[in-house]
Length: 273
Image 1 (tube, helix red, strand yellow):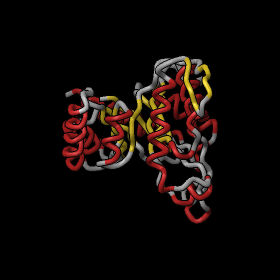
Image 2 (cartoon, one colour):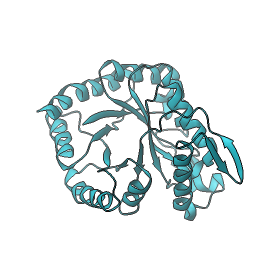
Image 3 (tube, helix red, strand yellow):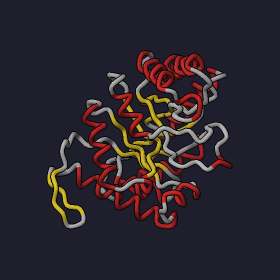
Image 4 (cartoon, helix red, strand yellow):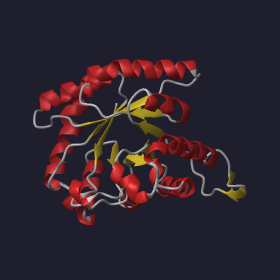
């Protein structure tokens, strides 16, 4: 199982110095991946914990690509209806190119009504918009020459397509993951509740003639209890998770490092036994 950690790109933890320190600590400790969330327009009455301060996830990962050399860099998740398909494809290809193909593209359809309102995007159309963007992304990474809106153009650089992990709940996210992605990215704190959904995901993939998709679980392990955290991580692996992304909160770099040390130590050791 790959072990990753969510990096806070909001609130007081989102300063350049703190982001760099945390990213480098995760890499030094041997974790596999860093993941960042996506919010673009937080309303004043829903800004507790962030103060409305959110860094753009794609710009942040481009920044971290130059500051790290090995660790994977992912979005958990990029809300596809928030951005036009072609600029999104260009961002994805550019980060994949500049990072040495370390990008992991977690995608979602968005949920916050205020953000859709601020963007002028109808929330009811988010699923169709996400599907169209995913279809377009697949076309861009399949050939140097692409067509959009009746115009042919060259899509370069065209590195290897990053793996796509579709976030969201069953059943819609499962079908989207099988159709467009390489894996599913659920949020869960209870491995036993994921097991039947992972079974269904594998059934859908088999029906479609696709290989068994990956399952990248976004969770919050109880790191204050090393034994319990290790046991829960092992339980996720046993029900079929292939990647685990811990999203614990932290106040500063020292607290982030303590959590990363537990993940790279006790949790990693438990997954090896």
